Image 1 (tube, one colour):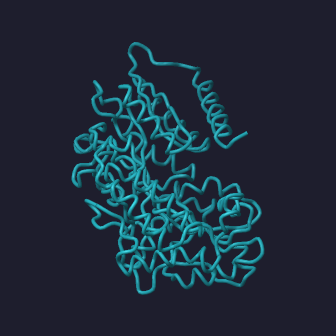
Image 2 (spheres, one colour):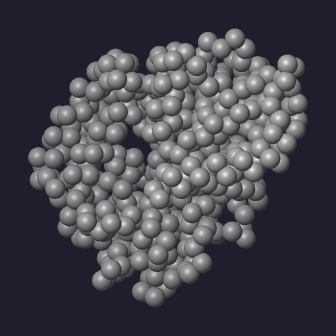
Image 3 (tube, one colour):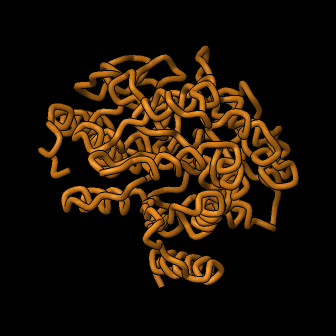
Length: 431
């Protein structure tokens, strides 16, 4: 059985149980029906369904159909098809790196005016970093960000203890990270696991004073080879594999992912966002915790934003029910329900700082790390074609990272091949 098949069976079982618990009711003549499309694993969907039930309990005139998919790629395919077919969902949950395509087409109903008129929500309730990522035109809020995650380092405390290494902490440096990763690499154990992608590379570039594009608001090209500070960070990132060998090589990563290796206890450190926590909480063979990213020599602490938002489809006859759902999801009660699943860092700062999120009885012990880095979060560009720029860049960066192509040739090819994508109009790339 494939992972996708397992996801479908798990989600089907969750929704079947929830439907049975609700008596299988559907909307009546006096009920407004809305559809909410989002992505997540079975455990996440359980949290969303619990929130839907709580919403319906308080809003008997609205019936919500939750329509989940497994991955963000599946979500993009679903949304593209539904918009093209003239049957978009009322509400959909989308990452800030991907919503630009739909915002540029005018497919999203901006939420700014709804938020301004709301008696339930106030802009000051939420992280400004998360809000700014969903201002497509730089001013008006397009979607309501429901989470505030960041790239962090998960580490195996037992392996650190066995090697006599201090746990990573705020302010640790690249050299500290590399020294620990080298010490933890032996036999079938590796010091670190990181995906060779633009969103994993970017915070190291920013920490070193570089940039990944020439203009954050109106980018025309990637700048991985053009600026000395950027190139130094790129080389440091590539050297983890090509020089130091502290991350699993190509064949081993293909046979067992870094996440699976971390779960098995043979990986010292693992880079990911908060999305990893529900899975990591299944670990019972060792202790683990979370730490901020290491800082470049003489650089600044930086991480990259990981945030998803509720968006409303434009052009629907009535947005009232959709907005009422978003208001509930973004208010304290809705945010607390999802925080308890372990998956999200709430964008509401009051909920993020509450026991509902910090949960001292459940790992990670240092969940405050996600809040500590909030002032240092940065976002990638929000252009209409950024998702394709990122997708094609990742494929080429992986070729370089695993030594399948020469470093210099590969980086030049990467910049040259994606440059035309910045000039595409919406729809030219098949979106």
